Length: 166
Length: 189
Image 1 (cartoon, rainbow over the protein chains, first blue to last red):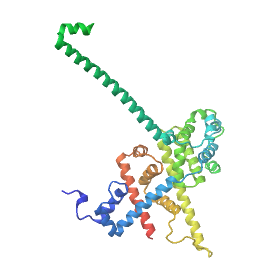
Image 2 (cartoon, rainbow over the protein chains, first blue to last red):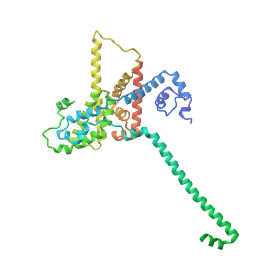
Image 3 (cartoon, rainbow over the protein chains, first blue to last red):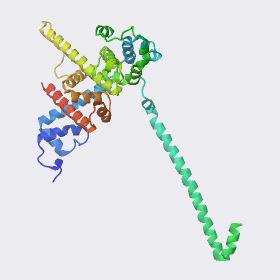
Image 4 (spheres, each protein chain N blue to C red):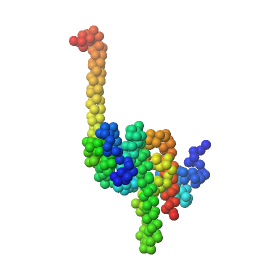
């Protein structure tokens, strides 16, 4: 059985259901069969416009900033109606003056490139150091073996052992 | 606001003993921990600073008085759900007020419509979207509010609403489809 998206008879209702997936990038709008249908179908165009409006509206709502003292004002207004003994706690005093601060990760985001570059350099250094030293050791032991074999072939094993153990 | 809280008799009795401070210190801790994210959520739903302050106050008063002053098991879930509900009721009241004002303006002889027809007003779009979120059924609205406006992951939404992650995803998808259909219809009219 052919996959759904390869069938020739895409009906309008199915594609209209997929418009959300298109906008969520699960399907590509560049696919010919989707584009060809949407260009000729007013209902799908309308649905696509609707999804775009929702996405834009949500984006606008999220990006609209409030005054930085809003948290402080809200805390002050709330603390006024809490019990008096709570209002006098040092924690309440802090809340009255509290202002939103970006999270640690967000604050460090501007240094993320530098940090990742430094980490990459450090990793390369460690790998180089480890690679060079292990290579040197290997080279040394292989050389020793070759020399040992040369002496064994020429002067005999007993004398070679005497030389190498001395 | 303060006056409203007093008139609803939500204030704690000032004659109670000093042990209240130690018993209910967790309210302040919750305010400290979740205050910023709650303000962001309320701001995105309401879009007016005074409304945000009122809804924030009401949310914490409800928290302080829930279950006769006992601490809820999941404070974050309680706060976010309460804040969402409080904000939605504020927005409903505001919408009714706005409709009444518009009705008065329509009836007045000096009414003039300054809006250019077909003008793409971003503020209007935001407001329309907010009012359309109000029209959603509650189970869909909760997911949109927590996921899209409260910046919660699907896992957190599922935990807050006591549903599965898959259900949260399905509800969110349905809600967006509903909103898209409504916003598309509105513009055509």
